[in-house]
Amino acid sequence: MTIQEAIKSSRKIVIKIGSNTLAKADGTQNVEFMQNFARQCKNLIDMGKSVVVVSSGAQVSGVSTLKEWARKKDVHFRQALASIGQVELMTQWRSAFGEYGLHVGQLLFTKDDFEDNHRSLNIRNTIFTLVDEGVVPIINENDSVSTDEFAIGDNDNLSALTAILWSADLLILFSDIDGIYTDNPKTNPDAKLIEIVDDIMALRKNIKIGETNSFGTGGIETKIQAAEKTTVYGIPLLLANGGRENILDNLASGEAKGTLFTTE
Image (cartoon, rainbow, N blue to C red; front, side, top):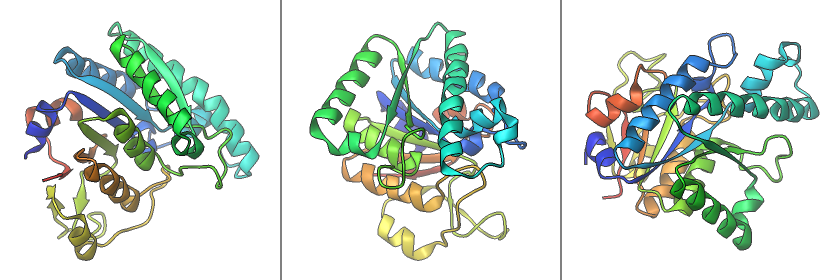
């Protein structure tokens, strides 16, 4: 299966946007990306597909709003920053999708929400209702109240849990890398992009997994964890560089590359 075929054959698509994709080099919110991404989502919706977005960026948006808090590391300040930033994040998403006649709905989760059967059923029903009514759900972890004990910890795994709960056909992870490489392409020019992964256990043995990046909470490890979760349920996962111009359009047309974790 190619990336183009995976997108074409999928009706229900979850798309996760990482903090690095949503942040400019100075750490502030990349509004231009959000506007262009909304247009590309509208293209998918016009093709008869349903889209759910898992959006990082609450703290990035908080820093954009209250720059003097940027260096504060205390957990209470970080949670407060996420609280402020989540409002700004959703305001920008509402504006971006509104340009194309689409409404958005906010859903904030903690780990407990997925571990409780009653809550998870309510999540599933709400997502289905929003999508059925033409509303784009925007999902994030509830960082303003989450602590290590209750946190999922990263939006790669959150998006995988969401895709499974919604019975999605495809999960797309947008990060600041083109996909999985044999080694770190930033330090090793000979590193090669792995375009298809059909054996995750073998992949783990044959690549070097680096550290997390500057803005995000995940790294290659959390993306592989997400793929391990979804592929068991028959949901392929596509990892691609969200910073590439018109990346969603180009993936759908077969003009862009990434790493596709298949279920075959």
